[in-house]
Length: 203
Image (cartoon, rainbow, N blue to C red; front, side, top):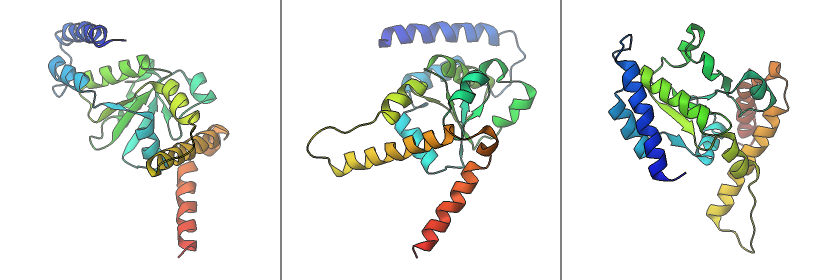
Protein backbone atom coordinates (compact mmCIF):
# COMPACT_ATOMS: atom_id res chain seq x y z
CA UNK A 1 0.00 0.00 0.00
CA UNK A 2 1.61 3.27 -1.12
CA UNK A 3 1.86 6.41 0.96
CA UNK A 4 -0.73 8.39 -1.02
CA UNK A 5 -3.34 5.68 -0.55
CA UNK A 6 -2.61 5.42 3.18
CA UNK A 7 -2.77 9.18 3.52
CA UNK A 8 -6.17 9.30 1.82
CA UNK A 9 -7.52 6.65 4.17
CA UNK A 10 -6.19 8.56 7.17
CA UNK A 11 -7.88 11.77 6.01
CA UNK A 12 -11.20 9.98 5.54
CA UNK A 13 -10.99 8.39 9.00
CA UNK A 14 -10.07 11.67 10.63
CA UNK A 15 -12.95 13.39 8.85
CA UNK A 16 -15.35 10.81 10.22
CA UNK A 17 -13.84 11.23 13.68
CA UNK A 18 -14.32 14.98 13.53
CA UNK A 19 -17.97 14.49 12.66
CA UNK A 20 -18.44 12.07 15.56
CA UNK A 21 -16.65 14.35 17.99
CA UNK A 22 -18.89 17.27 17.05
CA UNK A 23 -21.87 15.53 18.67
CA UNK A 24 -20.37 15.92 22.15
CA UNK A 25 -20.09 13.39 24.92
CA UNK A 26 -16.36 13.31 24.41
CA UNK A 27 -13.69 13.33 27.08
CA UNK A 28 -12.05 16.75 27.27
CA UNK A 29 -8.66 15.04 27.19
CA UNK A 30 -9.24 13.42 23.80
CA UNK A 31 -6.74 14.15 21.03
CA UNK A 32 -7.74 16.37 18.14
CA UNK A 33 -7.78 14.88 14.62
CA UNK A 34 -4.80 17.08 13.77
CA UNK A 35 -2.72 15.64 16.62
CA UNK A 36 -3.68 12.09 15.67
CA UNK A 37 -2.79 12.76 12.04
CA UNK A 38 0.64 14.04 13.11
CA UNK A 39 1.29 10.88 15.15
CA UNK A 40 0.15 8.69 12.26
CA UNK A 41 2.43 10.41 9.77
CA UNK A 42 5.46 10.09 12.06
CA UNK A 43 4.77 6.37 12.57
CA UNK A 44 6.25 6.41 16.06
CA UNK A 45 3.26 4.52 17.44
CA UNK A 46 4.26 1.42 15.45
CA UNK A 47 6.36 -1.27 17.12
CA UNK A 48 8.14 -3.81 14.97
CA UNK A 49 7.99 -7.51 15.89
CA UNK A 50 11.64 -7.26 16.95
CA UNK A 51 10.91 -4.33 19.28
CA UNK A 52 7.97 -6.12 20.87
CA UNK A 53 10.00 -9.32 21.19
CA UNK A 54 12.63 -7.47 23.24
CA UNK A 55 9.99 -6.01 25.58
CA UNK A 56 8.44 -9.43 26.12
CA UNK A 57 11.77 -11.17 26.67
CA UNK A 58 12.78 -8.50 29.17
CA UNK A 59 9.40 -8.96 30.92
CA UNK A 60 8.90 -5.22 30.85
CA UNK A 61 6.28 -4.46 33.51
CA UNK A 62 5.52 -1.14 31.84
CA UNK A 63 3.75 -2.66 28.84
CA UNK A 64 0.54 -4.55 28.27
CA UNK A 65 -0.16 -6.37 25.03
CA UNK A 66 -3.79 -6.40 23.91
CA UNK A 67 -5.13 -8.88 21.36
CA UNK A 68 -8.23 -7.35 19.75
CA UNK A 69 -9.28 -10.46 17.81
CA UNK A 70 -12.20 -12.66 18.77
CA UNK A 71 -11.72 -15.05 21.74
CA UNK A 72 -11.52 -18.20 19.59
CA UNK A 73 -8.55 -16.87 17.63
CA UNK A 74 -6.89 -15.67 20.82
CA UNK A 75 -7.26 -19.06 22.50
CA UNK A 76 -5.82 -20.80 19.46
CA UNK A 77 -2.72 -18.59 19.23
CA UNK A 78 -1.56 -15.45 20.99
CA UNK A 79 1.54 -13.43 21.80
CA UNK A 80 3.01 -14.29 25.23
CA UNK A 81 1.43 -12.28 28.03
CA UNK A 82 -1.30 -10.79 25.86
CA UNK A 83 -4.79 -10.17 27.20
CA UNK A 84 -7.80 -10.59 24.94
CA UNK A 85 -10.09 -7.59 24.57
CA UNK A 86 -12.04 -7.93 21.31
CA UNK A 87 -12.49 -4.70 19.39
CA UNK A 88 -16.27 -4.89 19.83
CA UNK A 89 -15.92 -4.77 23.63
CA UNK A 90 -12.86 -2.52 23.89
CA UNK A 91 -14.56 0.19 25.94
CA UNK A 92 -16.98 -1.82 28.01
CA UNK A 93 -16.91 -0.76 31.70
CA UNK A 94 -14.98 -3.83 32.81
CA UNK A 95 -12.16 -3.10 30.37
CA UNK A 96 -11.60 0.58 31.14
CA UNK A 97 -9.02 -0.19 33.85
CA UNK A 98 -6.62 -1.44 31.17
CA UNK A 99 -6.33 2.03 29.66
CA UNK A 100 -6.57 4.56 32.48
CA UNK A 101 -2.92 4.37 33.58
CA UNK A 102 -0.92 7.05 31.78
CA UNK A 103 2.38 5.33 32.57
CA UNK A 104 1.45 1.93 31.09
CA UNK A 105 2.21 1.38 27.40
CA UNK A 106 -0.50 -0.52 25.54
CA UNK A 107 0.36 -2.46 22.38
CA UNK A 108 -2.57 -3.54 20.19
CA UNK A 109 -2.30 -6.39 17.71
CA UNK A 110 -4.44 -8.61 15.50
CA UNK A 111 -3.84 -10.77 12.41
CA UNK A 112 -2.65 -7.73 10.46
CA UNK A 113 -2.94 -3.96 10.81
CA UNK A 114 -6.67 -3.52 10.25
CA UNK A 115 -8.33 -4.36 13.60
CA UNK A 116 -5.39 -3.19 15.70
CA UNK A 117 -5.32 0.07 13.73
CA UNK A 118 -8.99 0.62 14.51
CA UNK A 119 -8.35 -0.13 18.20
CA UNK A 120 -5.46 2.34 18.26
CA UNK A 121 -7.49 5.04 16.50
CA UNK A 122 -10.56 4.65 18.71
CA UNK A 123 -8.44 4.63 21.87
CA UNK A 124 -6.64 7.79 20.77
CA UNK A 125 -10.00 9.40 20.06
CA UNK A 126 -11.01 8.49 23.63
CA UNK A 127 -7.99 10.36 24.93
CA UNK A 128 -5.93 7.41 26.20
CA UNK A 129 -2.13 7.76 26.29
CA UNK A 130 0.91 5.63 25.42
CA UNK A 131 -0.80 3.60 22.71
CA UNK A 132 1.11 1.48 20.21
CA UNK A 133 0.39 -1.00 17.46
CA UNK A 134 2.32 -4.10 16.45
CA UNK A 135 3.29 -3.37 12.86
CA UNK A 136 2.00 -6.09 10.56
CA UNK A 137 0.34 -7.96 13.42
CA UNK A 138 0.71 -11.71 13.77
CA UNK A 139 1.44 -11.98 10.06
CA UNK A 140 4.71 -10.03 10.42
CA UNK A 141 5.43 -11.70 13.78
CA UNK A 142 5.27 -15.06 12.02
CA UNK A 143 7.49 -14.07 9.10
CA UNK A 144 10.07 -12.13 11.14
CA UNK A 145 10.19 -13.95 14.49
CA UNK A 146 8.86 -17.45 13.90
CA UNK A 147 10.53 -18.02 10.52
CA UNK A 148 13.79 -16.23 11.20
CA UNK A 149 16.74 -17.97 9.58
CA UNK A 150 20.32 -17.16 8.67
CA UNK A 151 21.89 -18.00 5.36
CA UNK A 152 25.47 -17.40 4.39
CA UNK A 153 29.00 -18.40 5.31
CA UNK A 154 29.61 -15.78 7.99
CA UNK A 155 27.46 -14.06 10.56
CA UNK A 156 28.32 -10.74 12.15
CA UNK A 157 27.99 -10.18 15.92
CA UNK A 158 24.95 -7.94 15.29
CA UNK A 159 23.28 -10.55 13.08
CA UNK A 160 24.02 -13.25 15.62
CA UNK A 161 22.51 -11.18 18.46
CA UNK A 162 19.40 -10.53 16.37
CA UNK A 163 19.03 -14.20 15.48
CA UNK A 164 19.43 -15.27 19.12
CA UNK A 165 16.82 -12.74 20.24
CA UNK A 166 14.37 -14.00 17.65
CA UNK A 167 15.10 -17.59 18.59
CA UNK A 168 14.36 -16.88 22.26
CA UNK A 169 11.13 -15.06 21.34
CA UNK A 170 10.11 -17.94 19.08
CA UNK A 171 10.79 -20.48 21.83
CA UNK A 172 8.79 -18.41 24.34
CA UNK A 173 5.91 -18.07 21.87
CA UNK A 174 5.75 -21.82 21.33
CA UNK A 175 5.97 -22.50 25.06
CA UNK A 176 3.21 -20.01 25.83
CA UNK A 177 0.85 -21.41 23.21
CA UNK A 178 1.38 -25.01 24.32
CA UNK A 179 0.20 -24.21 27.86
CA UNK A 180 -3.39 -24.56 29.14
CA UNK A 181 -5.15 -21.26 29.80
CA UNK A 182 -5.19 -21.99 33.53
CA UNK A 183 -1.38 -21.95 33.65
CA UNK A 184 -0.84 -18.72 31.73
CA UNK A 185 -1.83 -16.29 34.49
CA UNK A 186 1.24 -17.00 36.62
CA UNK A 187 3.60 -17.93 33.81
CA UNK A 188 5.75 -14.81 33.79
CA UNK A 189 5.92 -14.62 37.58
CA UNK A 190 7.18 -18.20 37.68
CA UNK A 191 9.59 -17.52 34.83
CA UNK A 192 11.01 -14.43 36.54
CA UNK A 193 11.55 -16.40 39.74
CA UNK A 194 13.27 -19.20 37.84
CA UNK A 195 15.50 -16.71 35.99
CA UNK A 196 16.54 -15.11 39.30
CA UNK A 197 17.41 -18.53 40.72
CA UNK A 198 19.51 -19.35 37.67
CA UNK A 199 21.40 -16.06 37.93
CA UNK A 200 21.91 -16.58 41.66
CA UNK A 201 23.23 -20.08 41.05
CA UNK A 202 25.97 -18.69 38.85
CA UNK A 203 27.33 -16.34 41.47
